[in-house]
Amino acid sequence: MELANRIHRIQPSATLEMTAKAAELRLKGVEVFNMSVGEPDFNTPSNIINAAIEAMNSGHTRYTPGGGTTMLKQAIQKKLIRDNKLNYNLDEIIVSSGGKHSLYNACQALFQKDDEVIIFSPYWVSFPDFVSVTGATPVFVNTDSNKQYEPIFKELESKITKNTKGIIINSPSNPTGGVWSDEAILRTIEIAESKSLWVFSDECYEQLTYDIPFKSTYQICPDYDRILTFQSCSKTYAMTGWRIGYTCGNKDVIKAMSKLQGQSTSCPNSIAQFAAGEALLGDQSSVQTMKSAFRIRRDLIVDRLNSMDGVSCDVPGGAFYVFPDISNLINRNVYGKIIKSALDLCLILLESKSVVSVAGNSFGADNNIRFSYATSEDIINKAMDRLEEVILDCN
Ligand SMILES: Cc1ncc(COP(=O)(O)O)c(C=O)c1O
Image (cartoon, rainbow, N blue to C red; front, side):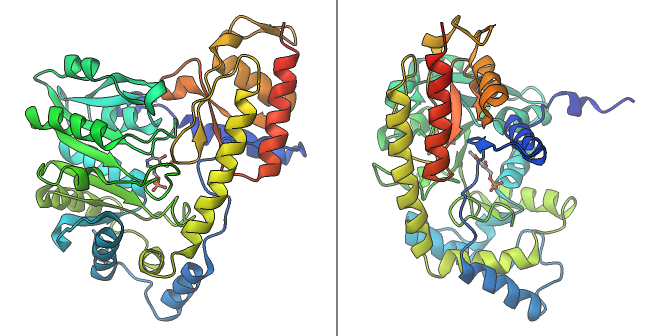
C-alpha cells in the first residue's frame, strides 16, 4: 500500500506502546508493575465529574465553536491570571482536544518544509514527530543533566541557522522531570528573540513543581510576543481521558489553529469543555493533594534508585518522572544477556520481572530509563525491589 510520505516521517509513540505491553501482560494474568504511565493514578475529582453529568443533563451535548466555548475561554482567562499572572484576550486563546492536539496544530500552523525547529534533548517523544510531519526538521540541542536539564547554551547558539523558525521548551519536563530556572528561560528567550523565533512553552506539568514555584515563560518574558503558552487539564486534574488542552498567544496563530481545528475535529468535546470549566475555577484542593502524594513518591524513588550500584538519579524538580542514568551497567551480563543499552535493561526488566518502564532512546538518551512515579508507593517499592534484584544478579 502506498501511504503518504508524511506517515513515514513519524514513529509510533513509544510510551503508548509500553502501556499497551503492560495491558497485554495483565491480560495473560501476570502481575505487572507499571512504571511507564504518563498520567496520574488518581480519579478525576468528583466536582469535575458532576459538572460533566450536569452538562449532559442540561443539553450541552452539541457542537461548540471550533476553538472552544466562550465560557471555557473565560475560565482559562481567569485561571491564567490566578495561577500564572498572565493576561490574554479571548481571541488569543484556543481550546483543543488535549495539549497534544494543541501542540500538533500549532506546529501545523507555523512550520513547513525547509524550516528547522529546536528541540531540547532529552525530549518528549512527540515533539520530533510533530515537527517532522509538517515537513520541517527537528534540530536537537543537548541539556545539562546536573542542572535540571537546562540547555547547553553554546550548543543552542551554534545550532540556530537562517532556517530556524521555532524553539520548543518543556519545563517541567517529560521525560526528565527537570524544572528550568528563570535565568535559563530568560536566556533562552533572549536567544530566540534575537532571531525572531517562535517559542512554544509546553507547560502541561505547571502545577507539579516540588522545589521552586513554577513560573510561566511568558510571565518571565512578557515583552516577547512570539511566545505561545500551552497548558492542559490532563495532568493537573487527572483528566487525561477527557482531552482538554489550550493554547494562548498571538491571535493570528490562534486563528490559524482554529481554522485547522474546524476542518479536522470540528470542536473539542462539549461535555469535557464544561467539566474543564469546573476544573479550572472550582475547588482546587485535589491539585494540592495529588501534588503532595507525588512529592513523597519522588523522594522515595530517587532514594531507592541512588542506593543501587551503577544507577545515578538526579533529583527532578517537577512532573512525575525520574530519568536515572544506567551507563555504569552497560556491558554487564545478566541472565545470559549483555546490557548494551538502557533499552536492553528495560526489556530484561519487563521479561524477567514484569516491570514496565520506557527506555531513554525514545527520548534521545540511550543511557537512561524513564520511570513514572504516578503510581502507588507499594508499586514503586515492588518495582524498585525487582530492579535491585536484576542489578544484584549482574556480573
Ligand atoms: C510534555 C507533554 N506535553 C504535552 C502532553 C499532552 O498531554 P495531553 O494531550 O493529555 O494534554 C504530554 C502528555 O504526556 C506531555 O508529557
